[in-house]
Each structure stands twice: as C-alpha cells, then as structure tokens.
Image (cartoon, rainbow, N blue to C red):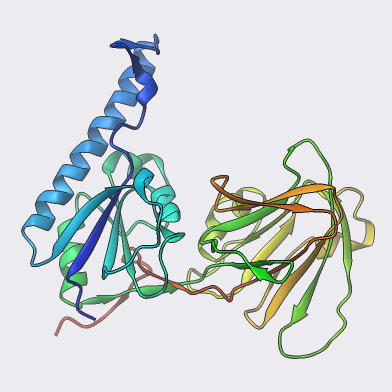
Length: 304
C-alpha cells in the first residue's frame, strides 16, 4: 500500500505547564528546573526537525497533539508519533489494523527510556521514513489484548498490558480464573486467588511492568499472552499456576469476587469498573497493530 497521507501525533510541546504561574517558576531547585527545561527544548526541536523532513517528502501530513485526540483515526495511511512509548500507547487506542504506525523518539527520551517500540530517533528519522515510503521495509503485526466484560467487548485494546485490581492499591482483590480453549468444550481447573490483582501482557508489553514484576521476555511478534497474579496470598499448591502464558486459541476466563474492581488498559488513563459477580474474558482476538519497529525487529525487504 502506498503511503501518502500521514498524521503527526505529538506529545504536548508544553510538557510541564506547572513550571510557571504568572511568570514565576513553581520549582525552586535550579538543577531540577534546568533538567525539565532541557527536556522541553529537546522535544520541541525534535518536532521542528520532523516537520522540516516531512515538508520535503511527497506526502500530505497534518499535526495533532496527543491531548486533542478523541476520535478514531481515519483517512490516513500512517501515524508518526513523536515522543516516547507512552505516546504510541495512547495513539494505539484510536487505531485499527488499516493504519500503519511509526514512532520517533527525541534524543533526550531515547537516552533515558528503553524505547522498545521506537523505530527512529532524530538521527535516523529521514532514512527510516524513506525506507517506509519507498517500500523497503514492511510493518510488523504486533498483538493487542481484547477484553470482554460480561460478554460485551470493551472498546479499547491493550498494546502493552491490562491490570485488573481493586481501585485501592492497599485492598485485597478476590477472583478466580481458568484458561479455556476457544474451539472445544473442556472443563479446565479453576484457580482461586486472593492477591493485589491480575496482570496480562502482550509480547510488546513483556518488556514493561511484567518484566519488572519478574515475568519473562517474549518474542516481539508472538501472539501468546502472559499473565501473572500479583502478590498472591497463601497460594499453597496453586503457586505454580500464578504465572504462565496462554496461546491464541485460548482465553483467560476471570470471575470477580470483590465488591469493587477496575480494569486498567495500558496504564491508568483508560479504565473500566468491575463489580462483584462480573466475568472478564481476555484473549489476543483484538486487531493487530501494524508497527514499523526498529531495525532489529522490522522485516526488511531486499533493496535490489
């Protein structure tokens, strides 16, 4: 597919509006202030650089701030996100599998963040963009998580992970789960849990919170989903079942037994409430996201 119409999705330029009120900085520590101002400048410079490159290319493009994105992204061939992985995660909730995504990380973010989903920095953005526009690289199909609440699909799909937990982090979450096959009527064993919640991640998300919690890295293009019961209370003989993975032809069937709960999708900005007796179905049935990954992950076509 020829890429001719682009959307430039930007992390807000004014990253720290609290730096000044009525012209007076609210931060008195000079080193902290200098650090934050440097971040803002590098980000603004990266945006300007990206726009200058796009103006030289045979494409139509328009910019939009991440904060102004409120409707599904339509009528574009590709979205370029300028920021970090958080900007890409935000954009993914508005994109289906008909749109391609490239992420540009500014140098400051690249030096402080792992940036597993970043395809380019300001140093190689033009080369990466040319490779995409001239068909020398193809996007990777990255899995996302589909969630059904009481058999009704949620509108948002998780690119990194979901967390199901009590809205109070100090409260105990009570639930059960079992791994079921989609195409056969089996009776899997139910695992009952009292813990601080349940996390499920994609392959892309296995580098994030799941890894920090002791999970394992997954191949980026895997369709499997990994799950972990957080801080299980006295799991006894079920301890070995608190952390594992399941295949694309399976789903995780969860029953919620606490009075309150929340499903957090890719962090805290997208969430849904759950209550006693609700059922939650988690699978990899969501549309994939077509992402141009860094050279280590992107499938590269021959240039000859």
